[in-house]
Structures are given as structure tokens and as C-alpha cells.
Length: 242
Image (tube, rainbow, N blue to C red; front, top):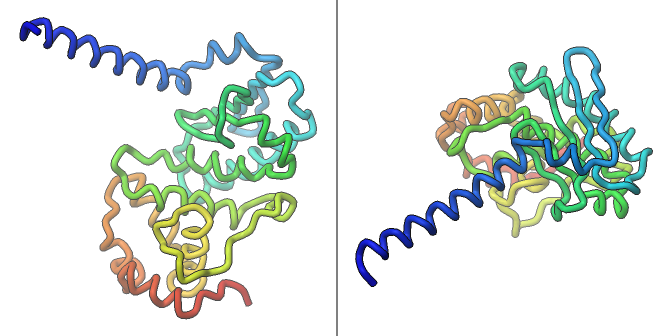
């Protein structure tokens, strides 16, 4: 193949990939298509926060919808007050049958899979977790993903409206676990640090991530102990209640 032809092919492939990535990003950033395909679009405002609820699932349970909205207005203002007062005041919920996960958040939008709520109608604190990601708004390269998800589940545990109704709880400690496991395992460790080592650590951790200044030295500077030392101490005595 001629060199110039080869370069042209590479350029076309690159442009195609970029176009696909842009379309994927626009899936979050542009909601016009979601609105066009919606069964219903509602705008709810309480205080300084507003929620646009786009439902693309004709048989989505109205009782579940009501509870998702309630959890948003209970916990999003709390999360904003505790962690990031500059977070967006306008949030969009999209109930999207085409989305195959449970839920995901980006760019002020939370996308939900209605099939999940058919099987788990009580899991309304998915909202508490996902909108915390909007509050976090960490820049690219802010720090490890296990911290991001660990904080979101820590917030769900501490602020959750009805975790019990969803049969959602923090797991018991196991020697096979690591603080890098993320989600509930990391959330439990974070909660232990708050209770037993230094109150306010997770709030400072969230701020460090958002300001892109997190480094592993954060733990020793904040608690007087290294991350590994904290985990080893937690492993020896992981009790978080009583």
C-alpha cells in the first residue's frame, strides 16, 4: 500500500473512532433525542434545585417514579451541602430501556434501567449513590476509581432513605477483601475510618479528589497513618457498630 494511502486510511479510522466517541458523549450531553422518544417529561422544582424527569418506558411504575423523585429532593440538597455547594442545581433523570446497566451518572444526567426497578422496586437509593457522582464531579485523572465508588456508597450508607427496603447493607469484613475493591467494601472501610480514626476524613478526601490534589500521602497527612496501616488496623478489628 502506498504510504499516502496508508496514512489516509489511518486518518479515516481515527476520525471514525472520534465520531463514535463523540456520539457516545452526546448521549449524555444532549437530551433532545431522549425527549423526542419519551412517554412523559416532567419538570419538578423544590427550592433552588430542579429535576427534569424523562420517562422512555411506557410501563414504568409511577409509584417507583414518585419515590425516585422524593429521594432526589431529600438527599441531593444534603449531599450538596455536605460535599460540594457548587454542584449543578439542574439534574436530569432518564428512564431508558436501552440502557443495560443499573444506573449511571454524568454531565448532570442520571440514566436508569427500568428493568432493574421491575425486579428491585425498593432500590430507590440508587438515586443517592448516582447523584453523589454529580456532586463529586471529579476531573479526569483525579484519583483512583475505587475512591470514587467507595465514597458514593459511603454516602448511600450514611444518607440512604431506605437501604433496608432494598435489602442493601455493607458486607461483613473478609480477609480476601481489599480497600481497592470499591463500592460497599471500600465504603465500609471509609465508615470505619470516620468512626474510629478521624472524623471528617471522607469529606476531605472528596475535596482532594475534586481539586485533583489526591495522593496516597493524603491518609498520613489527614489521619497520621498510612493507607496500608489503616487497612491493617481495620483488618484486625473491623467492627463498625456498637
